Image (cartoon, rainbow, N blue to C red; front, side, top):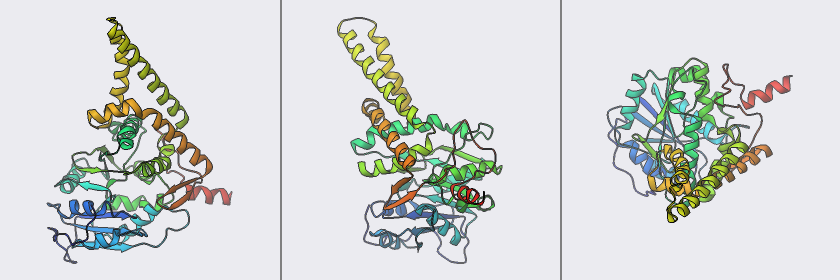
Length: 374
């Protein structure tokens, strides 16, 4: 929500000599529609001492003005990212450099944090002995495009990266959600932090991989009780965002697109046959109805409402297939646009459940260096 007036003074200490428990780092680029709600939800947190650092990543709207209207929020600017770095990585690295706390929370400007969630997250990280704790936020969907495709995507993500297996260090699966990553500073710096993954578009998963390969604990779960987000507000934003990410999240995008289309065609065909059987009073309609319910059951694992799941089951899979194909083609062409920038793609770290590297990954920038030296 856009704000042009100062928010109330937050209930936390702004005395410079007081060392906070948590440094909250928010990279923000043209986020005037979101930054106000995000900061309102964070400045009213209680139970722990914290500081908030908003890193203005070259915004051309009122993002900085809105952020500066909140008492106690520190706003810094960052220059254009170095060659090969992504803007978000450049911003969070700048924020981490000026942070003072032993815990660092990296969270996006489009998140809203539930009351008391900050204190509970730190307690959970300590109880679970997690060096990196990440929540997958509750996804807020409003437009038809969001309600159609977001449940399908997050259902597939839940199948590809089951949280209970991500938490198991022996499973060979690792993941994190960059919208909410809480790290213990000492192991974060030991693995190189975001600077070690600065060239990676999918920096959250790459960071989790660094922690796992270094023997650090990664704890990941659905965090609807702590944080929610509306990732994209328009179809154009949704298409651009998932074009950037899908080919990196799913190792076999072409096969997954075909599977999604096939499941959708079978489900609709079964529903039509079930309706015909019901009108003809043939009990076989029950079997066909179950085929539709199988697709619905898979999509409902994504923690959306029943109404959204029904809409996604009816219309989502072909749109998901289209986005997979678009993402695969963009990555094959070597360029993806995001927020007014175009990122060139070199050799990416492949992070798949079945082929998780057991040594430190060779990231894109390092790959280019090794190739040149070779």
